[in-house]
Amino acid sequence: MKIIQGKLIGTGLRFCLISSRFNELISSRLLDGAKDALFRHGVSPQNVDLVWVPGAWEIPLLAKEIALKGTYDGIIAVGAVIRGDTPHFEYVSAEMSKGISQVSLQHRVPIGFGVLTCDNLEQALLRAGSKSGNKGAETAVAVLEMANVLKEIRTEEA
Ligand code: INI
Image 1 (cartoon, rainbow, N blue to C red):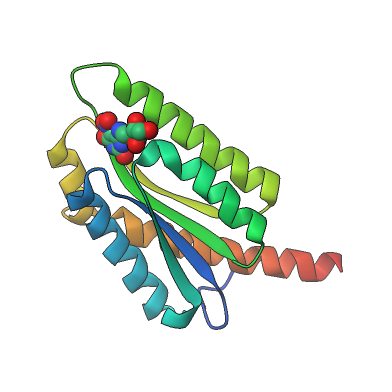
Image 2 (spheres, rainbow, N blue to C red):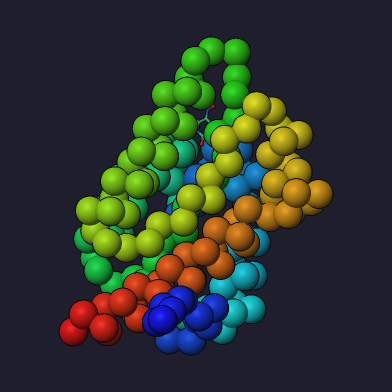
């Protein structure tokens, strides 16, 4: 049996982080978690770029532009959509998540979904570097694994 899996080694790999300014209290913590995870797995700071967007709604378009460049092994999106008093949350979170998934599949680049969708600020804080971990860091490690497993698969194809 042949087992193909991605190593968690980031040497020589390039990543682009996308962070939303909306709910920056949360997104900045997720961003710190993502950067820390990449660097501790051997990714060079010189090989990581960061793009800020206004809110989660804008993430898919930026992800598409970045994917089109073709210069990154993976993209990591972080942010937080927090439910308010109107249905706005539903529209933003649905389109953002669908958009990220579409860009990833269309452009065959791993895009980490480190955007929290929470009912309140407390839920978000718990997932941004406290009791429930840091979803930015978890997402970065997932993208690193995907970047490596895709390299393995593509080397086999060639
Ligand atoms: N953007 C977020 O990233 N999180 C939110 O919780 C949020 N809410 O709730 O409104 C949000 N809205 C802004 C949206 O992403 C766009 O930036 C805005 O609509 C302009 O296009």
